[in-house]
Amino acid sequence: MCFALCDQYATQLWTFGPECAMPAQTPTTFLSYSCEDSKFALQLAQDLKAAGANLWVDQLDIGPGQEWDSAVEVAVTQAPQMLLILSPSSVKSRNVRNEIAYALDENKTIIPVLYQDCAIPLQLRRVQYVDLRSDYSGGLKVLLRTLGLAQQEERDKARLEQEETEHKAAAEKSKVSVQSSSVVTEDEVDEAWESERQKRENELTKAIVEEWSRRGTVHGNVEETQLIKNLRMALSEWLSRRPPGFESRQAQRKELQQAETKRAVDSWLRRKGR
Image 1: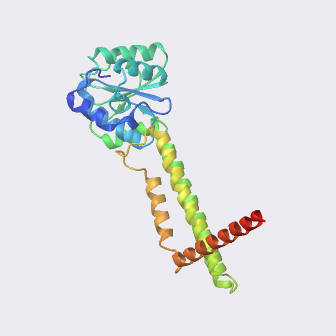
Image 2 (image 1 turned 180 degrees about the vertical axis):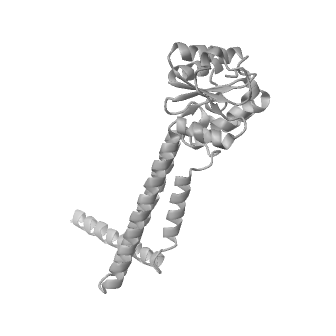
């Protein structure tokens, strides 16, 4: 880990603001790297966090006012596994070597990530590494599977497909019901549409909150997951199906409700006056 950040990264850390301080939940993965590899480490950390990794990295998770060495010590102690970026500079770094030694002593899982050709430390030569030297995208997919995030993405996709099937079935049922019955009122059509809108909106909100929880931060510098994008599209598509005249009928209902409330209050005041 780099204790003395270059000026550009120190400035970047401060501009993230307090919302990027220590994650709300205990990190499961600690990212170890040398100062010379800071730019690559930041890119990798952002990509992993965007995919839902509960990852701790100094450039994103140490907030203004925190003591650097204390924050690193707490994070490396709490995280059960370490993601280690291997490069010529990292294998020579005293801080990185200390972190490797500590992880081994504590029986933590070490996942080596080969960033540049280098002499792999002797104690790690029997540990399979993830190769990001020539194919970053392919190596990132392997790393995501290693961290168990690919399965989460597949579960999110299956969940989205199931929800979309249910949405389509509900919409078709509503359409058939309206077409086959002349007694369906505009109020019932509006109520069915509003109920589905609230359901889709709640699903989107839940997915965003779950993503924030997995990411450990709510800052907006990370691209949304495909699940959230799809849920946004599903909500937008449903909004386009708003029944004709819905807004005016809603306004009328609100006026009637306010008038009814006023009558009830006036009645109560009259009874109280007696």
